[in-house]
Image (cartoon, rainbow, N blue to C red):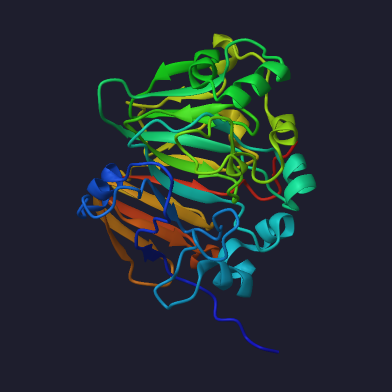
Length: 350
């Protein structure tokens, strides 16, 4: 029997910015402390990614320092990377994709399919539910758009798409200003757009299924908007219900100023899909074994495991931690976001 060398140590990752159709990336560069002028269309940094861009073989994947794709390393030893309980539910999938996303311009109005639709049309176990943790803003009016204010008839949506009536689409959506510390949970099917000047840590299911209602001035081909399904089929996955203020409040949290070494960041409905919390050691924080994607937002410190001397951390670092690293000790004057898959045994889907 071939023995498996278990991954035991956290791994610092470089930026991983596959080409996108929209502008942005200056806030990512500033966080990482690198030159922001080299790229205009680097608005997304896919952190610890085992997911490829739609229709691509390797674009989007994270490469480890030893030259392997993280995807291949996880497949070679899923229990070492993810833990036995996770594997019992999700097999060798991390069940998670984390991005740094800096919108240099407003993103188009779009939505993502739920698990059942993705299984039927894309042969995928996962749709694309996501959540945004706002970590920075710039400009005069950083805002996001999410959910129709009133119920919409599918025929109306089809007309908007046919005419590419962006003003009507935006006017139909809820819109609100955001600031650092706000978090927004985006269930699959919910129409949404991130506005210019909003910088987020985004958690999502590990796919790249975006169905784009507003493709003109963003995509070079309308077929990319419906991912080859046709808009008639794609809109079957759209949530056309109305989201009033009370309902919308179930998606949004305001965590700025929250005290404590560990702060749960996301709305309760996101728990079957992913977990995220803010970590501020005071002075030391002990973390249970888990597959973790860590994003250091400020300060400096160390991350030690049960078996190694530790990894020095500083603002802008992104780190992947395998489950087999065991119990962790996070220390120092720093602020970080810990991103994890759902708790073992839990998974979403509709």
